[in-house]
Image (cartoon, rainbow, N blue to C red; front, side):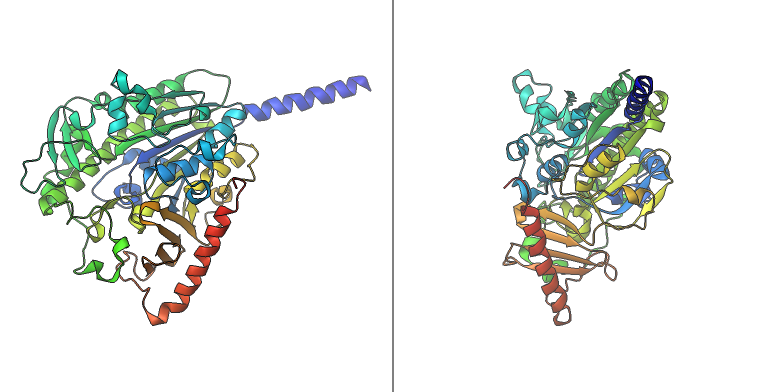
Length: 482
């Protein structure tokens, strides 16, 4: 009897070890300020992104993925903490740690389960270009970590770069109608056709460090976060990446309607527009070319990281995720950059590849918040009850599966809220809607030109959406942080 018990114990121990050995690695790659419409796998015919396309060709590409905050700080704090922005109150650029206490973040949950966890460059919020520049300045090196959470990582690495100070041909496009403004830093539209190779810049260094970490031998599975800062302004990349987009005058700007802003509330007009940025058509087209060059440069770095997985023999044991923290306007509605709650800004590219699963395109609604519970489930880890996202792993087997009837996103600096259903996009400014509302039929009007909020015919839909939003906010705030 004792021998049988010993044999049973050995078998159980061996199966436990084997299960642990079979746990997937997780490679989380995130770009900064990337719109899905800039990727060729999402239909762009000008900007070629072969490396991201290759991942999409073997993974599941989501066409209706949405961020939870339409600028960096609240979005990144949300998907890393597992909570919506209005659950933690992290509506700006701070770490969620004071609000979540000892609750484990996404990567920390894996770390607690025996994973090696590391980040390279920007995963939580970090100022760009400022934080990237600080990395090269010993007096400000601590600022380089931005709103990072040290507890989330076994190790963390930063990638300094010259940003707008890079040697090359630069031009400030924003607020520079007479062409006399020098190349400047900050959150400003600046294009720099830079001298030197990929490794001169932050993303090149990020790729190199990620490749090094992937090739390191370790007994643990890993959760590796690789944060590329492009195409966030400044639009700076080596010269060669600009060539496919020249002359810049060849860039085709989005279709624009006269008096497009007349039917939307003031709060719905984005913080950066062609008007207030004083960008004429030449500058707008160069901004698009500079953005695309930055995307092409970032895509090349993604390729280096994906190649390292193959070279290290880890491609068949690693879940790979590619996404962005939010989307970006490239002149649609005469809007530029982020913050807006329209699809260009609130939607994100999302590709998830799990070895052994068939490639697919999924049109169901998903949120970045879903990545935490989904990867935990796929890796055999417990999914904490507290996390507010949903496990979408079934979609990776059947892309017709739906787990939610609406995605929820916010733009706190505008007190804006988005409920995005398959058909309707409802946007409300202020919890009492005092600053206005927008309603778009995205099936009939995919470019969101016609605000139906004041249409008598659509009043019942507006009323229903207002009630649904109020209920959603109530659910978001009913959490274990209170």
